[in-house]
Length: 297
Image (cartoon, rainbow, N blue to C red; front, side, top):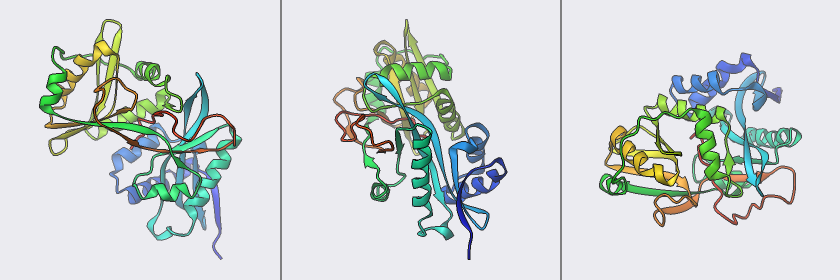
């Protein structure tokens, strides 16, 4: 009879967990090692073991959610993975149920995640998660972006992660249900983007700032993973994107409530949430446009 159990990760498991990640997500070694070197914390990772072998894992990354002008504790489910030969045995649902228990015990009021595929929304729905977060997607041609960047100048500004966090928070905090990330999460998102050839582009106009986390150009297309900017800094930011990341088409992911590219694009669900403490606080019925962003995907 096999011996099965759910345990917290240990440092000795790093190579086994790295192997699970690479197999399940078909990932190159460098970005996976980057996570384990910069973001991995054993107490934020649950592992399913079979006969002392790690066969599945899930990471619970700390975050905060805006609610009534205050912040509530939550966690983001990241890199949930089961080795192919151990799938369809209920290991992941067991891990996620344990994650909910662990989160509730440490004071997390919500668990949230971004399914990697659209058909996984149904799977996570069976585990208590509901579609919730909203992202506005705007696609612009090079010419359209140039028109919007008219008058902007290239910026050489570099913002550190604390500054990015402060700017992001100032924009996101106004929308109930939106996620605020700490400096560690922002540093990881920027670092992993750079490993794939992307970059963080910043701008300043007086006391106003902007930033855009851009992917490398792929087949003449660039994805702007997140863009946040004060009004006066936006033209310089767009002009710098055009110069630093030349592409034929730009696909922007931004908060639905952002004033950038107003009235353009489509808002769609990008992420799910699950209450852990059965409180009457945050509504999970999408009363507004709660934004997740920087989802580390």
